[in-house]
Image (cartoon, rainbow over all chains, first blue to last red; front, side, top):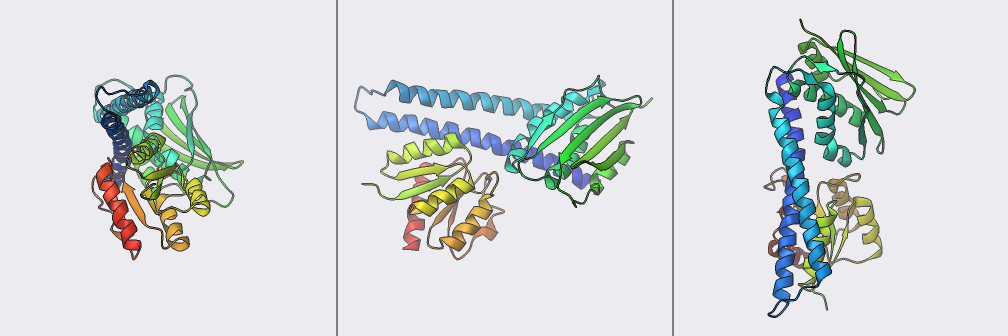
Length: 212
Length: 123
C-alpha cells in the first residue's frame, strides 16, 4: 500500500508537469504555424506587420522560458531520489513542492503559500520522501478545503529535528482523520503525525527527528 | 463569410488566442473562453456551430462543462482536447453525442476536419 502511494505521488506530480510541458509545446507549435500563415498570406517580398511579428516572438520567448523552468523543475524532482550524503533542507523541499503543485492547485482553485522557514530545518532521509509526505498532506488539504482557499505551509526547526506544518481552511463538520498513507509513511520515516482542528483550520504537523 | 463559428474552451490563453487567429485565416470565426463558467455564459448568449473543449479546466472541470452542454445543448457538437498522448482513458466520454477527441499538441488541419465532421454529424 505504501509503495502504491509512492507511485501515486510520483505519477501525479510528473503527469502534472508533462501536461504543462505539452501546453508549452502546443503554444510554440501553434505560433510557428501562425508565422507560416503570415508568410503564406502575402506575396513576395513578404511584409509582416511589425506588431504582429513581435507578438508572436514574445509568445515564443515566454514559452521557451516557461519550458526551461519546467525542465529544471523536473530534473530537480528526478534527482530527489539521489542520496548525496548532504542534509536535506526542508525549506527547499517546500519550495520545490509548491512549484510541483502549481498546476494541481490551479485546477482545484486553491493557492499554496510557503511561509519563510524558521531556522535550518533538516530532513533525515532522501528528499523524495519529504516531497512524498508533503504531497500526502497537501492532497488531504486540497480535498478538505473550499475552492478559493489558501493553504499555508510552514517549516520549522525543532529541538528534536524539524516539522512541516500544513494549515488548511476548512468548513465545519469536515472529517479530520489522517490519510492512512500518510500515517504509514510517517511511521516508516520514524516521524510523528499530529492532526488537529483549530478555529476553522485543519492543522497537519509532520514531525521528523534527528537520527544519530 | 465564415464557414462556421466555434468556441474554444482552454485555460491556456496563449494557445486559445493563437488558434483563434489561425482559424480566422481559414475563414472560421472563432472565440475563446479560459474557464467553464465564462464558456457557458458565452454559449447562453451566442450561437456556435461547434465547441472545442479542453477536458482539464480549473474550477468547473471539462467533464462538468461537457455534461452541462449535453444536458442543455444536446444538438451542439463538441470536440474534446486531451493533454494525454492518446485518447486512452476517455473511452467513457463517448456517447450518443458522437463527439471527437484530439490530443495536444493540436494539428490545425486535423482539428478543422474534426470540427467539420462533428458539425456534419449533427445536421
